Length: 184
Image (cartoon, rainbow, N blue to C red; front, top):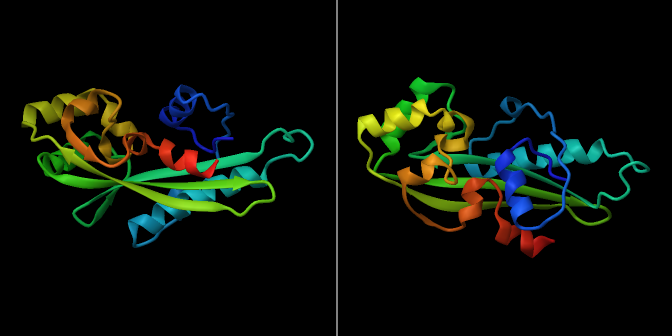
């Protein structure tokens, strides 16, 4: 069971051939705070997984053996970037990020019946391309950055704005498949 509304996470599981269902957690992410970005994403992922796991019906959901919660943020120059609040914020972020690096952090929480909860953060360094103001404005005008943690989608148009990664590609999309393989 994927405890996430993210279409990108769902696509990753589908492409990897991992059968799953989706149930949105309903967790109010704004209510969960932590000064450390690594701890923040783990707490968010855990809250989502626990919210869905607690709502499982033992009789009707007997075939569900695991619940996976995830959450991602971009840690950049000491700040945590989730989804931009609007185009102005997205442009301001991209003006700062262009030509620099940031860490995309994804918290993962796997809850299985009668097994210990598995909680982890996977970090991937993202090297942003140096972009002109016109390139930034065109990308933000596409609307894509407004839907993604950090303000970019590696698997979409945002891939053209990235010079490289150090770490897990799928983690930047929202779910580290190598991590998932090790815990399933």
